[in-house]
Length: 248
Ligand SMILES: Nc1ncnc2c1ncn2[C@@H]1O[C@H](COP(=O)(O)OP(=O)(O)OP(=O)(O)O)[C@@H](O)[C@H]1O
Ligand SMILES: [Mg+2]
Image (cartoon, rainbow, N blue to C red):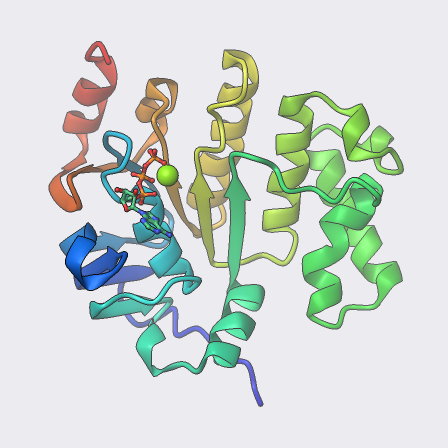
């Protein structure tokens, strides 16, 4: 089976329309998302914010294709996810989407360079080339001299930089991040936001970042504010900076 190709010429990077999702048995359901409409563009760092339980991770999982919605259309990189089989979804995700989570999910028995190589090895790149590319990216995030170390020897911020290198190494068009800075000190969180904003703007990628962390707000091109499974408002331009300047 061939990996479905992204169709990046076809409009926004992500377009979600009328998406609903509930969890639990019929007589005791939690409505996590209700008719959500959401869009994000290539070259954009787009934040999704809102109180705990409002549906942010659920929305991100639906965009990633790790969770199927109950209703609605989801187009990612010009492809309709509902048209994919589970196997095609897995292949599409592996080839074209990078993930960064709050818990860095590094494999402790592998060195840094081996961890960062994984997405390339899964795509069939030979080990030697994969490790060369992974090493170059580790150098870019300031960890080139530690490439053969073990993740457990690193601080939280350093581990998150390795996780970012792993998410970027196969040059995905879409990067999805769930609370990537909340475990980090301000300085490291700032560096990581710079890296992600640069990946979006200079690399023409789409970065969608779910966060509770007010320190990240000023980096955004747009902010989607969610509440209770719905989109409340989408901020752009000066409204982003006003929102970032408010006390949170
Ligand atoms: N697998 C699941 N089974 C049952 N309920 C779930 C499941 N995943 C999410 N929910 C419920 O759906 C709602 C939305 O959850 P979600 O994880 O998307 O919120 P969130 O905005 O990411 O919250 P947080 O900021 O705390 O991470 C919550 O009420 C949650 O309890
Ligand atoms: Mg969440």
